[in-house]
Length: 89
Image 1 (cartoon, rainbow, N blue to C red):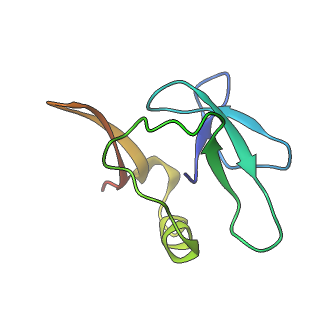
Image 2 (image 1 turned 180 degrees about the vertical axis):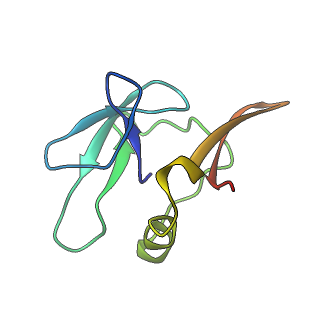
């Protein structure tokens, strides 16, 4: 996940030793800020909050970074619950 939410509900990028809130399930996210992979957020408890979610590789995360943050990881309701779309324009 490229964006987490801060305490004010604003989208934030990961930062070393960072914590955030998942916009879909409201659980805790931890920042993954290594030297090899692109920085991203991961669920602290390995939650499957979006049944359509998939692992995101370097290409996928970089591709999402080309769009304005308001168009990235946008939530919308479906018949089966909330879904986090990668890009919505």
